Structure formats: C-alpha cells, structure tokens
Length: 111
Length: 112
Image 1 (cartoon, rainbow over the protein chains, first blue to last red):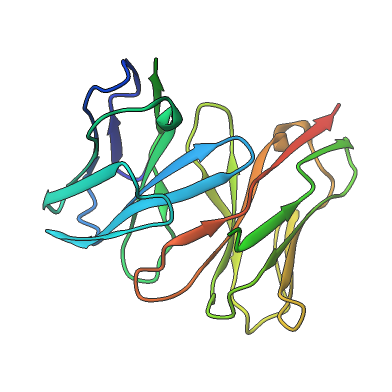
Image 2 (image 1 turned 90 degrees about the vertical axis):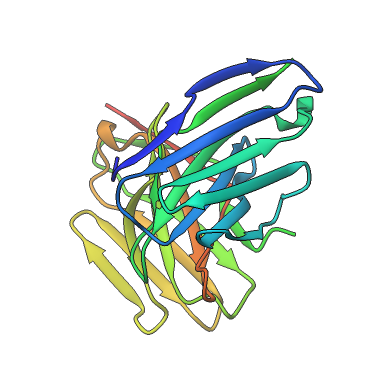
C-alpha cells in the first residue's frame, strides 16, 4: 500500500460529534490528498496539502478542515458530523509528477 | 459540475470478451489521464495512464485510446478474465497540485 496508513478503518459516530481521520505516510511525499467516495460520484477531492502547513480546498470541502503539522501526517476533521458525511474516505500521496497512491480507506457512518 | 463523465455505469462481459469503458472531459488544462482499478474493500490502484501527446497506450491486455480533439478517452480490456471484475475509474489531472478529478466509476463483471 505504498506506505500509507489510514486510521481508523471503520468508525460509527453520532450526528453533531467531531471526528478526526488520520493519514500517515512513510514515503516522505510532498503531496497528500483526502477524497470521499460515494456511489454514483466516484471519488471527490475534499482537501489537499502541498507541504507542511500548506493546504487548499477541493471540490467538496464544506464541513471539513485539515491540518498537516508534519510531512508524514495529514488529518481530516469533521467539526460536527452530519449524516451526509457518511462515506468512505481515502487518503492519497504523490511526489512530483508520479502516480498517486491510495490508502485502504476509512468507512465512516454518521447516525 | 462533473468535469469527467464516465460510461457505462455497469458492464457485464463474458470471459474472453472485450470490455470497453468510455470517458469524456471538459477541462482542456488536464494533461494526465489515468485509469484506476478498485476491488471491494481496497483503495484505487493505478492500472494504466496516458498523456495527451499520444493517441494510444497499451500495457498487456489493457489499452487506453485517447482522442484529444473530441476530449474523450477509453479503456479497452482484451481477453477479459473473471479476475478483472472490479470497479474502474477514469481520472484526469493538471495544474501544479495535480489533484485527480474522477469519473463516476464502472462496475465490471466478467462471467466465467
């Protein structure tokens, strides 16, 4: 899995609670991305990072925030989870002009 | 706004047949077009990719055909096998951050 670890792999949480998903890489790659996967939508970009403390919004960033205080970790936070954020979340990493490698995903259910 | 449109949504092919999945894009700034394969419970994995300066790329049983003027590209899987049963995503990227824009996916089933 190209040195990417997502945690947790599965989580059930209640509406209105904060949730943080973690992506950890051992490849020292510059670029890290968070996507969500939903039926009929493919994967959609939430946020991405191009270096420590350097992040930017993607297509579906509303309700999400991110932080990258170290090269190896990229955190995705749902400040107040809603049922519409029930999804499978994937982290990806890339260095330079090479292919992007994806993690195994985190299945999040908001009840 | 869906910048990459993929069809069909699902595809059933007999073993040994040809599987064809089509994608169309809108943003002319895209300069890299990968196809990803995803098995249940796994993350997407790069299958094959093409850049717009070539019209075709072949790797084993997998071929990408690219039509820059029509802004379309397709994946052909020759001699399809049951092990090819998976979800396939086309994607496109461009710009400095090279974030991927994905199609909606095609669920391929290859019957034995």
